[in-house]
Image (cartoon, rainbow, N blue to C red; front, side, top):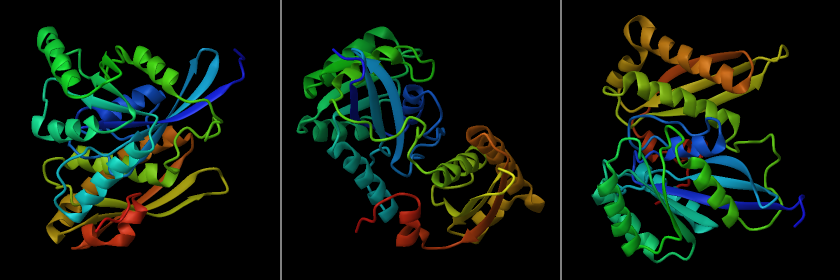
Length: 304
């Protein structure tokens, strides 16, 4: 066993919306890479987190494909999100199915189990939220799910508190094949900074307007540049589908968009380690969910 061997592999993270995937990816990576919001379906783009670990003396890089929650596709936007999720699972060295034992969302979990049963990758079942779930039903659920799908291992974790995460991370690391790292160590998330910046703004948008704003909104990157003084200037467009939604985002006298921008700017400055100048404006585009250009900008493949 040599100390300089490296391993690198792809882990697809699947689960019904709100099972806690983004929180889990962030816990594995050790920093925030996927946005977490109480609203289901906020992981839009195929956000990749890169987790580093040691396994048997080897340095392991795990590329986590934080696949968008798989839900029955309705409009074109949904179809693109679903296809991105399955695409992520296609070339994986391990597939991790995350289940919330409290809100099981059976109607969304069953199709996932059926699809997983026929896949050849090594599958891991992770039951999340053990900090709030009761033990007996938890074990019964684990037995039921392992009877349906051939899971290589089962883990009980709390993505939020980190309970059980190190053991699960070690098991994943051991499954990764030998190979050169795909990303240099300092490039911890390959979602480019401009896309991550949009994710941060979008998270604030949902956090501050969660009830009033439907999912039909996107944040598009317009420009992202470093100023000579080292600070970053970011221009983004918030796209909504109706004029009344524009009014909601702007708020009275522009107060709401100012609050959203301020919160996003603070978080970005912390993430990027630089002063951030963030400029937001709102655009009404009725058919944006059908627009190919926007899809490509937010990192999704166009699906007919």
